[in-house]
Image (tube, rainbow, N blue to C red; front, top):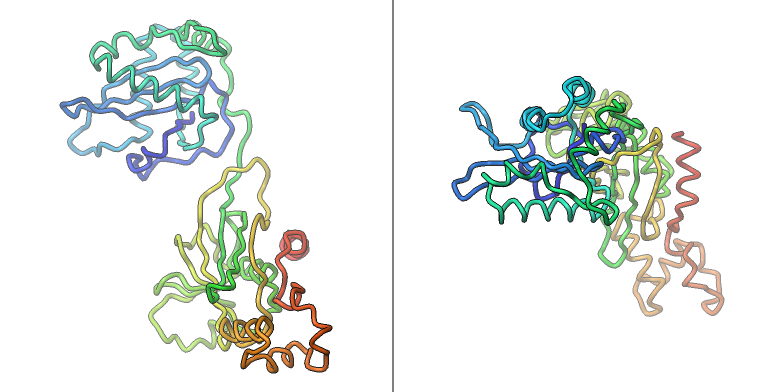
Length: 367
């Protein structure tokens, strides 16, 4: 069973709620709203995606319970209200058993589905909770511009005893990695990666995506409590802080993470990459690391860090810059006539961003 909730309800979900990882038959999909009366009695409003059937259930909070939404409250609401509607006992027992593992998603199938839930909320508030609980099951929702008997449709679907899932899904993570640079030269990349990607493979991904050659030391930092690096670097680390040290090939993103992390490459030039875990994605095929977006040319290796790169770019862009001769020399252009220089050439700005080149490298190194 999947329960689809508006994003405004995210803060009401209990920590124990499980994320949906499958495509469900519409008869097992319910959208949910959480309503309260003037006396602050709480009600769960549920609308079935396939049939438009709606239920309204007053939530009773025990002394040891929180007022959050969880799978137990959803299960109780559906069990009690669907039984009260008088559906065939055996068919309903099959349905509730098949859908007993309740999961949650914030992905509505359409704006229409979201609007229908909102319309139901408005109707309940205008009708009053006591009357709405008695009459909501008799509403005739509109499906494909026609009013339908929701109970009859739901009873027919129950009699077919369909399976709950039509397809299993996999989890991936949307990750944005931003290189700390002077504001004039923004550089970032966005990826979809599997949750079981190791930090060793994440290191490879960053090297490919930003054009580094792997000739310097590196490490990941998760706040001040964890540092992740190659095993041979752990053996010679001076442990200058109290952070726990982890082997990058022995730990995955799923096992150890936080919303924002840092990857540092080349402790001389100090290239700092800010890693943001943006959101969990559900995908139909087993995920592979892939770059989906990005911006900006990556700096050259050994160019002196962000400020060295900025000085070279300043020398290229401004003929009167103090860095002009040094920039041309660093790029091997000191013997060229100024009139022959194409300073708009992207190759003179670093390693140009190319989805095709990055993903070819990822396929070669990580697939």
